[in-house]
Image (cartoon, rainbow, N blue to C red; front, side, top):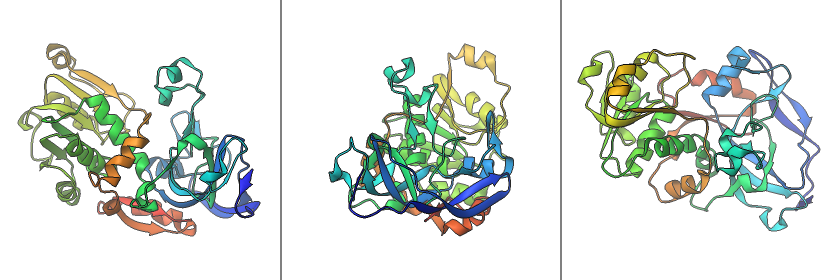
Length: 343
């Protein structure tokens, strides 16, 4: 291991002991593997999955059955490197892609490493996340950021990557007409990326007036209150991206698609949803999902550095490690877009 200064053997971390039970305590600082870097964490975005683990203690088959450090939207500064990594990287400001693929399975070799059956992902049991003073990641998953990009913005490259991946699936391009259901953080990022890709019509649907208003500030060309506008009144679109997980929103979005349109399901909701199968068949619609992302960080960096996407303005509050539970509660407020933890 190479480092410019001695790395402490212990660090502070916010640890989920079980559902509804978070504690801040000292834990061992992660030990570097030869291909890893040690990052002093500067900022971590709060994601809905963190909140879900806190309240439920599980997401699907992933169960918190041992103490777990949450947080996967992270940035910081490299303070030490493994023996296979150039010491020149020490001091780099980086955004962390919080996953590790096996690199040898069929999915990895086809470039779909997000579908690797052996994927390890921050804050998904049993892999610790970044609500801590330090975290480790393979060197090529730590992306150097330009001086013009803040560490706060760099922590949000992870949800931005979800939006980039969704629009890749949607085949969004100049002139596209896109409908987005849900104006939470991911919905807002979806709207920004749609405009960055050249979409000329970006319609955002949400139940909350405050979130609809916010969507108009971040790239939406129009907004819809789904309690007022029925499914058959929604303008016909080329692509529909669901960031709500609501069965009614998914159905309405699919019904709004033009022939050969694409529906991309991003939001997490019910495991099973009733779909208008005859409409899907008759219009040859494509319905697909999103599971994280692959190879998105370079574009995320370009979009933010160029000003095409604004991440700074998404941050509505910041909290210390001792106030993670408060940050989780803040996400219930429709005026909250992104809460950050700053260890």
